[in-house]
Amino acid sequence: MSVRYDKLGLVFRPDRSKWWMRSHAMNPTPRLLKEGPLVKVYFAGRDDNNRSQTGWVILDMSDDFKVIDMAAEPVISLGRLGTFDDNGIAPISLVDFESKTYLYYVGFKPGGTTRMDLYGGLAISDRNEDNFQRFSEAPLLGRTPVNPLINTAPFVLRDNSVWRMYYVAGLQWFHKDLPSYNIQYAESRDGITWDRTGQVAIDFKDGNECALAKPWVVKHDGGFEMWYSYKGKDPKTAYYQIGYATSTDGINWTRKDEEVGISLSKSGWDSDMMEYATVVQYNGKNVMFYNGNGYGSEGFGVAVER
Image (tube, rainbow, N blue to C red):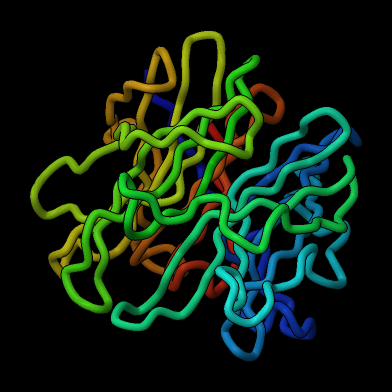
Protein backbone atom coordinates (compact mmCIF):
# COMPACT_ATOMS: atom_id res chain seq x y z
CA MET A 1 0.00 0.00 0.00
CA SER A 2 1.35 3.41 -0.93
CA VAL A 3 2.06 5.98 1.79
CA ARG A 4 -0.13 9.09 2.09
CA TYR A 5 1.11 12.31 3.67
CA ASP A 6 -0.57 15.06 5.66
CA LYS A 7 0.92 18.49 5.05
CA LEU A 8 1.92 20.60 8.04
CA GLY A 9 2.71 23.66 5.95
CA LEU A 10 5.81 25.83 6.04
CA VAL A 11 7.88 25.06 9.12
CA PHE A 12 10.83 27.29 8.30
CA ARG A 13 11.01 30.64 6.54
CA PRO A 14 14.20 32.51 5.62
CA ASP A 15 15.59 34.65 8.45
CA ARG A 16 16.33 37.76 6.43
CA SER A 17 18.32 39.32 9.26
CA LYS A 18 21.17 36.97 8.37
CA TRP A 19 23.39 38.11 5.51
CA TRP A 20 23.55 34.63 4.01
CA MET A 21 19.77 34.09 4.07
CA ARG A 22 18.11 37.17 2.58
CA SER A 23 15.83 34.76 0.72
CA HIS A 24 15.23 31.04 0.21
CA ALA A 25 15.70 27.93 2.28
CA MET A 26 16.38 25.52 -0.57
CA ASN A 27 17.31 21.83 -0.60
CA PRO A 28 16.31 20.86 2.96
CA THR A 29 18.74 18.08 3.90
CA PRO A 30 17.78 16.49 7.25
CA ARG A 31 20.10 14.81 9.70
CA LEU A 32 18.56 13.11 12.75
CA LEU A 33 20.26 13.97 16.04
CA LYS A 34 20.68 11.64 18.98
CA GLU A 35 18.95 14.09 21.32
CA GLY A 36 15.49 12.58 20.96
CA PRO A 37 13.19 14.20 18.44
CA LEU A 38 15.60 16.85 17.15
CA VAL A 39 16.51 17.06 13.47
CA LYS A 40 19.21 19.25 11.97
CA VAL A 41 18.23 20.43 8.52
CA TYR A 42 20.94 21.80 6.24
CA PHE A 43 19.71 24.08 3.47
CA ALA A 44 20.79 26.82 1.08
CA GLY A 45 19.85 30.41 1.79
CA ARG A 46 20.68 33.16 -0.68
CA ASP A 47 22.65 36.31 0.01
CA ASP A 48 22.21 39.81 -1.43
CA ASN A 49 23.90 38.65 -4.64
CA ASN A 50 21.55 35.67 -5.02
CA ARG A 51 24.36 33.22 -4.22
CA SER A 52 23.42 30.02 -2.39
CA GLN A 53 25.02 29.76 1.06
CA THR A 54 24.70 26.57 3.12
CA GLY A 55 23.65 26.71 6.78
CA TRP A 56 21.35 24.77 9.09
CA VAL A 57 18.42 24.92 11.48
CA ILE A 58 17.55 22.51 14.31
CA LEU A 59 13.87 21.63 14.65
CA ASP A 60 11.96 19.77 17.37
CA MET A 61 9.76 17.23 15.60
CA SER A 62 7.80 16.57 18.81
CA ASP A 63 6.81 20.22 19.16
CA ASP A 64 5.35 21.20 15.76
CA PHE A 65 8.85 21.44 14.28
CA LYS A 66 9.70 24.40 16.50
CA VAL A 67 13.03 26.11 15.73
CA ILE A 68 15.55 25.29 18.48
CA ASP A 69 18.74 26.69 17.01
CA MET A 70 20.14 28.10 13.78
CA ALA A 71 23.56 28.55 12.20
CA ALA A 72 25.05 32.00 12.64
CA GLU A 73 27.23 31.62 9.54
CA PRO A 74 27.44 29.25 6.56
CA VAL A 75 29.17 25.93 7.22
CA ILE A 76 31.43 26.38 4.20
CA SER A 77 32.61 29.44 2.30
CA LEU A 78 32.20 29.90 -1.42
CA GLY A 79 35.10 28.94 -3.65
CA ARG A 80 37.78 31.25 -4.97
CA LEU A 81 36.90 33.32 -8.01
CA GLY A 82 37.04 31.10 -11.06
CA THR A 83 36.47 27.80 -9.27
CA PHE A 84 33.40 25.61 -9.78
CA ASP A 85 31.60 26.77 -6.61
CA ASP A 86 32.43 30.48 -6.56
CA ASN A 87 28.81 31.52 -7.00
CA GLY A 88 26.91 29.18 -4.71
CA ILE A 89 26.86 25.99 -2.63
CA ALA A 90 23.74 23.94 -1.85
CA PRO A 91 23.67 20.72 0.23
CA ILE A 92 22.53 17.37 -1.14
CA SER A 93 23.59 14.59 1.26
CA LEU A 94 25.73 13.79 4.30
CA VAL A 95 27.60 10.56 5.02
CA ASP A 96 29.35 9.66 8.27
CA PHE A 97 32.52 7.67 7.64
CA GLU A 98 35.02 6.75 10.32
CA SER A 99 35.56 9.98 12.31
CA LYS A 100 34.48 12.33 9.51
CA THR A 101 31.31 13.66 7.93
CA TYR A 102 31.21 14.01 4.15
CA LEU A 103 28.99 16.75 2.74
CA TYR A 104 28.14 16.30 -0.94
CA TYR A 105 26.86 19.46 -2.55
CA VAL A 106 25.99 21.42 -5.68
CA GLY A 107 28.54 23.99 -6.79
CA PHE A 108 27.16 26.86 -8.88
CA LYS A 109 29.03 28.88 -11.47
CA PRO A 110 27.59 31.36 -13.99
CA GLY A 111 27.63 30.02 -17.52
CA GLY A 112 28.68 31.55 -20.80
CA THR A 113 26.76 30.20 -23.76
CA THR A 114 24.41 28.56 -21.23
CA ARG A 115 22.78 30.07 -18.16
CA MET A 116 24.83 28.13 -15.62
CA ASP A 117 27.34 25.40 -14.95
CA LEU A 118 26.54 22.93 -12.16
CA TYR A 119 29.01 20.50 -10.61
CA GLY A 120 29.07 18.11 -7.67
CA GLY A 121 31.41 18.98 -4.82
CA LEU A 122 32.63 17.41 -1.58
CA ALA A 123 33.47 19.00 1.78
CA ILE A 124 34.63 17.13 4.89
CA SER A 125 34.49 17.91 8.60
CA ASP A 126 35.22 16.18 11.87
CA ARG A 127 32.18 14.26 13.10
CA ASN A 128 29.48 16.52 14.58
CA GLU A 129 31.35 19.67 13.63
CA ASP A 130 30.33 22.29 11.09
CA ASN A 131 33.69 23.57 9.93
CA PHE A 132 33.49 21.86 6.54
CA GLN A 133 36.53 22.13 4.31
CA ARG A 134 36.25 21.43 0.59
CA PHE A 135 38.05 18.31 -0.47
CA SER A 136 39.34 20.00 -3.59
CA GLU A 137 38.99 23.25 -5.50
CA ALA A 138 38.16 21.04 -8.47
CA PRO A 139 34.71 19.44 -8.61
CA LEU A 140 34.16 15.91 -7.41
CA LEU A 141 31.94 15.44 -10.48
CA GLY A 142 33.59 17.17 -13.39
CA ARG A 143 33.04 16.77 -17.09
CA THR A 144 33.92 13.41 -18.61
CA PRO A 145 33.37 11.79 -22.03
CA VAL A 146 30.40 9.99 -20.44
CA ASN A 147 29.03 13.15 -18.80
CA PRO A 148 30.20 16.18 -20.81
CA LEU A 149 27.51 18.61 -19.58
CA ILE A 150 25.88 19.13 -16.17
CA ASN A 151 27.21 16.85 -13.40
CA THR A 152 25.63 17.68 -10.07
CA ALA A 153 23.36 16.95 -7.07
CA PRO A 154 25.28 13.91 -5.78
CA PHE A 155 23.23 11.89 -3.31
CA VAL A 156 25.62 9.38 -1.72
CA LEU A 157 24.73 6.30 0.29
CA ARG A 158 27.35 4.06 1.90
CA ASP A 159 26.03 0.51 1.57
CA ASN A 160 28.40 -1.85 3.41
CA SER A 161 31.66 -1.60 1.43
CA VAL A 162 30.03 0.02 -1.61
CA TRP A 163 29.51 3.76 -1.94
CA ARG A 164 26.49 4.40 -4.15
CA MET A 165 25.88 7.71 -5.88
CA TYR A 166 22.74 8.96 -7.61
CA TYR A 167 23.43 12.19 -9.46
CA VAL A 168 21.97 14.57 -12.02
CA ALA A 169 23.57 14.25 -15.46
CA GLY A 170 22.99 16.71 -18.29
CA LEU A 171 21.91 15.36 -21.66
CA GLN A 172 21.50 18.50 -23.77
CA TRP A 173 20.61 22.19 -23.78
CA PHE A 174 17.51 23.05 -25.80
CA HIS A 175 18.53 26.70 -25.54
CA LYS A 176 20.58 28.86 -23.19
CA ASP A 177 18.04 28.66 -20.36
CA LEU A 178 16.64 25.14 -20.74
CA PRO A 179 18.76 22.05 -20.06
CA SER A 180 17.68 18.43 -20.07
CA TYR A 181 18.97 16.02 -17.41
CA ASN A 182 18.21 12.64 -15.88
CA ILE A 183 19.41 10.72 -12.81
CA GLN A 184 22.37 8.40 -13.23
CA TYR A 185 24.21 5.94 -10.99
CA ALA A 186 27.86 5.50 -10.02
CA GLU A 187 29.88 3.48 -7.52
CA SER A 188 33.04 4.09 -5.50
CA ARG A 189 35.29 2.32 -3.01
CA ASP A 190 36.17 5.42 -1.03
CA GLY A 191 33.45 8.04 -1.66
CA ILE A 192 35.88 10.19 -3.62
CA THR A 193 36.82 8.47 -6.90
CA TRP A 194 33.74 7.42 -8.82
CA ASP A 195 33.20 4.98 -11.68
CA ARG A 196 30.70 6.72 -13.96
CA THR A 197 29.52 4.62 -16.87
CA GLY A 198 26.33 6.46 -17.83
CA GLN A 199 24.14 3.92 -16.03
CA VAL A 200 20.67 5.52 -15.90
CA ALA A 201 18.77 5.17 -12.63
CA ILE A 202 15.66 7.24 -13.41
CA ASP A 203 14.74 8.18 -16.98
CA PHE A 204 11.95 10.20 -18.59
CA LYS A 205 8.46 8.75 -18.69
CA ASP A 206 7.52 10.42 -21.99
CA GLY A 207 8.71 12.80 -24.70
CA ASN A 208 7.57 15.94 -22.90
CA GLU A 209 9.50 15.29 -19.71
CA CYS A 210 12.96 16.86 -19.76
CA ALA A 211 14.27 17.19 -16.20
CA LEU A 212 14.79 14.82 -13.25
CA ALA A 213 16.39 16.44 -10.24
CA LYS A 214 17.78 16.00 -6.72
CA PRO A 215 17.51 12.31 -5.81
CA TRP A 216 17.07 11.21 -2.19
CA VAL A 217 17.49 7.48 -1.51
CA VAL A 218 16.60 5.39 1.53
CA LYS A 219 17.63 1.75 1.98
CA HIS A 220 15.57 -0.64 4.09
CA ASP A 221 15.07 -4.40 4.44
CA GLY A 222 12.82 -4.56 1.40
CA GLY A 223 15.14 -2.69 -0.94
CA PHE A 224 15.48 0.98 -1.84
CA GLU A 225 13.18 3.98 -2.22
CA MET A 226 13.94 7.18 -4.10
CA TRP A 227 12.27 10.58 -4.12
CA TYR A 228 13.18 13.08 -6.84
CA SER A 229 11.70 15.98 -8.81
CA TYR A 230 10.46 15.95 -12.40
CA LYS A 231 9.14 18.46 -14.93
CA GLY A 232 8.40 18.84 -18.64
CA LYS A 233 9.22 21.16 -21.54
CA ASP A 234 5.66 22.30 -22.12
CA PRO A 235 4.78 25.47 -20.15
CA LYS A 236 1.91 23.63 -18.49
CA THR A 237 4.29 21.03 -17.04
CA ALA A 238 7.38 23.20 -16.54
CA TYR A 239 7.03 23.23 -12.75
CA TYR A 240 8.58 20.53 -10.61
CA GLN A 241 6.53 17.86 -8.90
CA ILE A 242 7.75 15.13 -6.58
CA GLY A 243 8.35 11.66 -8.00
CA TYR A 244 8.90 8.29 -6.38
CA ALA A 245 10.62 5.03 -7.39
CA THR A 246 11.62 1.70 -5.87
CA SER A 247 14.43 -0.78 -6.45
CA THR A 248 15.47 -4.17 -5.11
CA ASP A 249 19.19 -3.74 -5.85
CA GLY A 250 19.76 0.04 -5.83
CA ILE A 251 20.67 0.01 -9.52
CA ASN A 252 17.53 -0.87 -11.48
CA TRP A 253 14.56 1.32 -10.61
CA THR A 254 10.81 1.37 -11.27
CA ARG A 255 9.04 4.72 -11.33
CA LYS A 256 5.87 4.83 -9.24
CA ASP A 257 5.05 8.52 -9.24
CA GLU A 258 1.39 7.75 -8.63
CA GLU A 259 2.37 6.31 -5.23
CA VAL A 260 4.26 9.35 -3.96
CA GLY A 261 1.35 10.19 -1.64
CA ILE A 262 1.51 13.97 -1.89
CA SER A 263 0.37 16.53 -4.46
CA LEU A 264 0.10 20.26 -5.13
CA SER A 265 -2.06 22.36 -2.83
CA LYS A 266 -5.01 24.26 -4.27
CA SER A 267 -3.47 27.55 -3.14
CA GLY A 268 -0.51 28.92 -1.23
CA TRP A 269 3.20 28.37 -1.09
CA ASP A 270 3.22 24.90 -2.75
CA SER A 271 0.35 25.29 -5.23
CA ASP A 272 2.47 25.77 -8.38
CA MET A 273 5.36 23.41 -7.71
CA MET A 274 6.79 20.97 -5.19
CA GLU A 275 10.38 19.78 -5.31
CA TYR A 276 13.58 18.64 -3.57
CA ALA A 277 11.88 16.15 -1.22
CA THR A 278 13.89 14.41 1.50
CA VAL A 279 12.53 11.75 3.87
CA VAL A 280 13.51 10.53 7.35
CA GLN A 281 11.78 8.26 9.85
CA TYR A 282 10.40 9.52 13.16
CA ASN A 283 8.12 7.51 15.47
CA GLY A 284 7.86 4.84 12.81
CA LYS A 285 6.53 7.23 10.16
CA ASN A 286 7.99 8.97 7.14
CA VAL A 287 8.63 12.68 7.59
CA MET A 288 9.08 14.57 4.32
CA PHE A 289 10.82 17.93 3.98
CA TYR A 290 10.35 19.76 0.69
CA ASN A 291 10.32 23.09 -1.15
CA GLY A 292 7.43 24.70 -2.99
CA ASN A 293 6.93 27.66 -5.31
CA GLY A 294 10.05 29.54 -6.34
CA TYR A 295 12.54 26.79 -5.44
CA GLY A 296 12.30 27.44 -1.72
CA SER A 297 11.93 31.22 -1.90
CA GLU A 298 9.44 31.11 1.01
CA GLY A 299 11.22 28.36 2.96
CA PHE A 300 10.59 24.65 3.35
CA GLY A 301 7.65 22.63 4.58
CA VAL A 302 6.94 19.26 6.14
CA ALA A 303 4.50 16.45 5.48
CA VAL A 304 4.05 13.44 7.77
CA GLU A 305 2.88 9.94 6.90
CA ARG A 306 -0.71 9.26 7.98
